[in-house]
Amino acid sequence: MKLYVYDHCPFCVRARMIFGLKNIPCEIIVLANDDETIPQSLIGKKMLPILVTDEGETIGESLDIVRYIDEMTGKPTLAAPASEVVEAWIEEASGLVYRLAIPRWSCSDYPEFKNESARKYFIQKKESVFGSFSALMKESPALIKDVNMKLTDLDQILAALPTIEQYSLTDILLYPVLRSLSIVKGVEWPVGLDGWRKRVAMDCNVPLNDAIAI
Ligand SMILES: N[C@@H](CCC(=O)N[C@@H](CS)C(=O)NCC(=O)O)C(=O)O
Image (tube, rainbow, N blue to C red; front, side, top):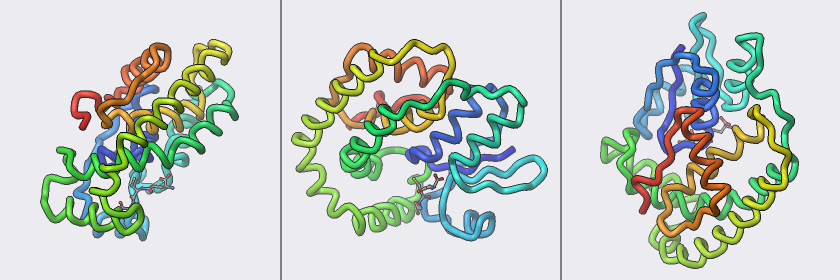
């Protein structure tokens, strides 16, 4: 199987996670961010992740890929119940996380930005949606303060949940958001939550971005 991704992309992280959690081999291909031809030819639009199965079937939505791979073995890994309260937190916090992460992604050393044209493509596309990156960077101290408070809430939410030895679809939604935030320097990770994100990173074999935080 082949999985086309961008390293920074949280939706791609969802798809990468299920391969890691189930220990299923897959060729991970990082496309240049401005390569429109390959995704267009596979699914008719410029969007990743895309899975190409051994049978040549293409699947182009992250959660469809997750479900397909989880069900493939006949023994689901995502067996724990979803958590409404955690998913509500994700909904509330995501805007804040991406306003911090996106300008930092644009100047990071991800393989999808190896060519300058790919980096420019990303910057142009995202600034048209999120506004100027220099303005976002100036907003960072206030955004980091807000996100640190949100992390304290999340830490308490996770601590209050019953301990379950299995993963859930909610974990597949949450980890990519926290991994996105890990590129931001100055974020304070409460101890319990820090343990959670590091354990998931190991289990799913998708490393955090702490080492390249800006
Ligand atoms: N609903 C899709 C969303 C995927 C998505 O938005 N991918 C982004 C990358 S993070 C993308 O490919 N955007 C087009 C682009 O970057 O040009 C999924 O869950 O797979």
